[in-house]
Image 1 (tube, rainbow, N blue to C red):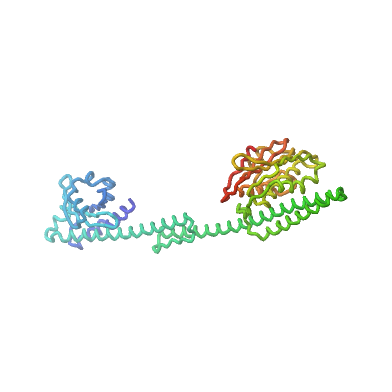
Image 2: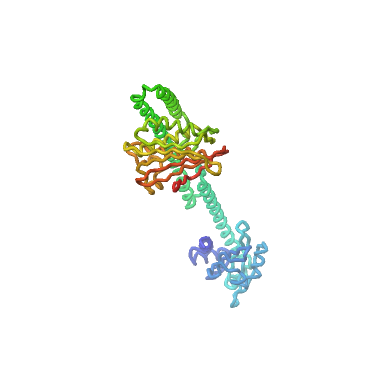
Length: 441
């Protein structure tokens, strides 16, 4: 409809007087009528545009059956002149040509009696010339419209590329006007998106460094807490030779753990994205569990009742250092949850059906609400303790899932908590992330 308006306005004279003057200049008389402009879709025989808007979007056979002889010539690709008779005996002289790039046939029809009656002295040449001029103007307008359509298509392709993430895409439109303004707006939007993405990347990198630093600080805190507990027991037990031997071994292991923790500062920041470098190999989990208990729980036995149920051996393909960190976090959390009032710490391990093994750590502390478990338990920097930064369980889950396992929890406010680490007992080829089952143990 917009193109039709452009065509009609261009084909019409500025005023009736100017139109008559133009006709006299070409040897034509005044007619007092305007020509009919017709654009016909060759493929569907649909009238794309007609000066009489009532004919638009109908087939020529339906709307203008009297136009059949001319439309047949137009659809066959012919160009030239012809006649057709409208109802009421009005004969029209028509000139037509093809606009193949657009799939259209174009025609301009004039009232034959009004235009030709007084001009028989001049023959049909003047009319043909006038109609040819009108067709020329119409063709020019269609060329302009085609260029405009190409510009719009270029903008559409550029917008699609930007939407697909190609933010370096530039939309170039040489012509001025609304299309160029639209292209420039898309280019500005692309530049702005690049800036925002760059800032987001910087923010993520900074947050990753902050979190990995907090995680390492958390591990250092646990190691120092174990050393402090060992030193406190030395004052009471150092006279025993057996205790001294165990204390020396515990100090050696704690020192090695501190060295490994500090060495992680020079590693790439992988943990916050879950990209752990696991050194997984078959390892017996029982000595790992006993070592953690000896360092972190046994020195507090007078305050806590410690129940341990472990098999003689429990082998699984794990990164022993990482799994030791998990068990250590769970044991320390359990002791801290019970606090100075004491309580019972229960540590169990064993095999499960389906080639899985488990490690369970339970306490009789304050427990957690169901809402906290669902919304905050495994989120970094969330904690119910007065001290700490809330990274222990987040790290535990990340490590366990990196092994292809899961971390389960069951808890009730005021009744204690039990965590269970479930790990595959066979080697796995690739790490498959699983969501932890926080609803049941």
